[in-house]
Image (cartoon, rainbow, N blue to C red; front, top):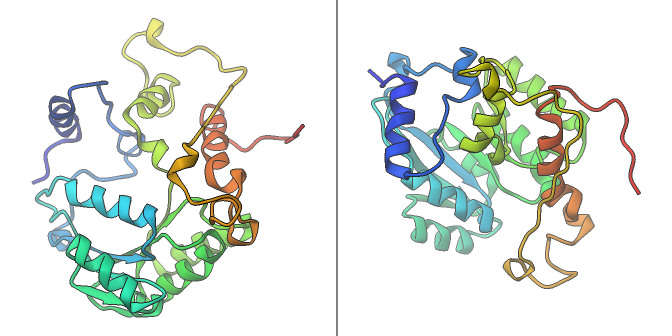
Length: 256
């Protein structure tokens, strides 16, 4: 049986040795179970779609996720636009099945869930492909280039009874979970004076090291036709942070 959520939090805090965690909001609200059904005792088998830096970082994290009685995680397949790149990535991360097309990962019967890490404009097509092949999907942010496409993916996931999620990693930081709890979002704080007051204004900044990406203006980070630009690359983080305390979309948006 999987340990209670609170016990897992204490265990991770002891290992990490810094900011105390809180039980994540989805568990506090009863939206995520802490005990896996009997049929989910095998590892969750991931297929990685694309082989860029973000896909590399994601695979590194999966390697260090604690294996539990629910089976843990296993990366079983990866695809790139060429088989050579897929094979190089597979060798680096010890992935057994490299593919030279994205369709092959989505069709692989050994894959349970696909992580979509392709270029932003391709997210919708690739996530839809995975869903139509019976795979759960986790899509790197931004989910899609248009809100209507994101809604279509969620609707398709509901229709097929498959998980659809956006990889907005900041929402799962311990400090963010602490803030959500102390905003009264699903769980009352330990003491009234522990609570964050009424939120009236939010200022958010998000910066990156330009040396960590390719040259300007050819790198995909900058190229608009490849889904680049600040709005898609880092702007989504500050928008998500601004919306979190209010729990709903803004009534108006202005820019200067």
